[in-house]
Image (cartoon, rainbow, N blue to C red; front, side, top):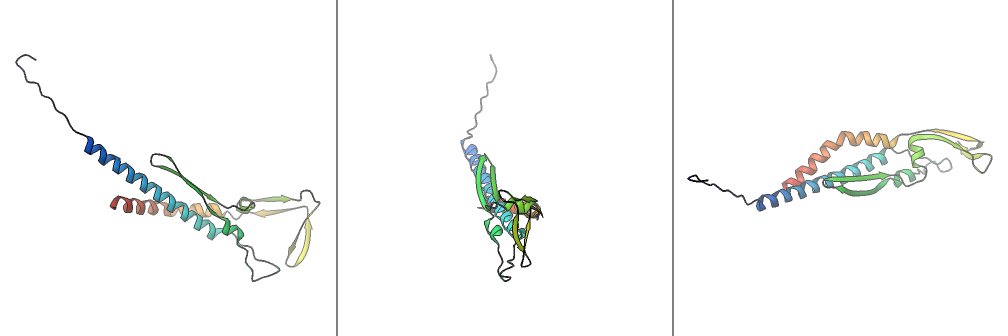
Length: 158
């Protein structure tokens, strides 16, 4: 520009970018920590709500197989700041005890089992669900905000 002034500026953003990258890493760590704590909370709640069978033959014996089978399956990062956690029972009847349904005799004419020490045989039996997983999810819903707030506070303070 003839007779004018040229004014050039530049900004070195390398320090700022490094700080943003560190903040993103810490945010991801906070989300991971909260996800891991959240799924652990869920598993504990599911175990607490899972029904426990009592043995007719040995009244002092309490089963607990379903309860003990509930575990964290995986915690996986699925994107920047995004984590997926899954948990559930490993016993084959876990979903049935949760949601309920009807069991039909298969490959035999009758189901045979004891009720109050007496043997019975039936073609099918319907069981009401206990909804222990839904109850655990309700518990988690009430606690998740605090779980995330604590994880963020711990990670961002470090």
